[in-house]
Length: 466
Ligand code: ARG
Image (cartoon, rainbow, N blue to C red):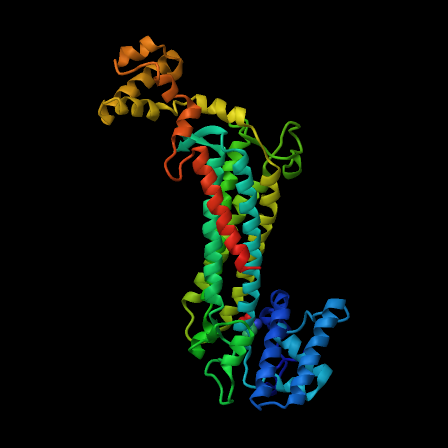
């Protein structure tokens, strides 16, 4: 078993059950690159301030580099019995370079060290997730561009309501994901604002640290202003988990929609065979498992967010070991969203749209009833009267199993003398949709504009992240 860092104070070794219980190496080893990066900068600062010698600093930096090389080549494996990643790195370093390794932790605690490591790690993860979101939005925009004239029913209460296009529906999801992208950027900006390194265990240190130097070298805007907060702040985990949860909620809504769209009841789309699964007993089945899993995993991610919120709510200043629980929750949320984004993007990319079926569904359900009422209103009838009259017409049509456009002009005139031959144009589904030229609406020009705006935002993201 690896030796405890704090052995001197104790007369006995820790019980092996406590050792297992306490250990975080299983899940914090994924921060090892960030841990070593922080250590390198800390050592450079200690040397610059004359707290350790230049020679010690050189030994530490080359020792850290050799550890990184050996981990990459497989010559060194992470010891699963180490208490945590910080201990593992320090002990491995000391085994390699001797006393200089023991000087690395001068003016530092694992409390500010871990607070730094999580920030550095989540900053990288946030960037990876943003890149996946950008890819998904691009696929959505491309699919939307291919479907700007695919008229389908728009729904409220899952009842056919008014005509939209499939492109318009897809761009609603692009809008959600564009907000997600901003939320990730925003959460990351706050994560990058303040560097906790140099807070020490809780109360700073008597060594003349240069916290501005470490903050700047590690890509932070400034050192955190208060050392107690520096070691015990996990807002950035919660903010990222929140951004992830909202993004999962959007993917879950999209998934639910896809599940409906590919059912025999709708058949607006067909998923590629490679992104569906069969049944062990029902030979005809083609199931949208991917989307169901995304819907299911959304609950799991909400659980991660809740874990973090509840874990933090009763913690007095400053560091408490409860906070070690942050990593499994936030890493699970990150991994889950990444997995979902990686799978949903090619699934959407390969899905086939079936515009004829959308159009057929649009023809049923009186989704042009508002347009009929609007027609009368434009001819001078007050809207409320026009609304009522159209309601009666719909009711009669239902009784006769007809659509509005199947009524003869005489039948129309029987309801109101305002009806003329141009009513057929006014309630034509394609024209109804095309006529909805209001900003943000379903007309082809409007959806093309939505796609343009989305692509502009993506181009700005790419320029910022080049
Ligand atoms: N593994 C610990 C964590 O993740 C590192 C900090 C330990 N600090 C301490 N005072 N025991 O929170």
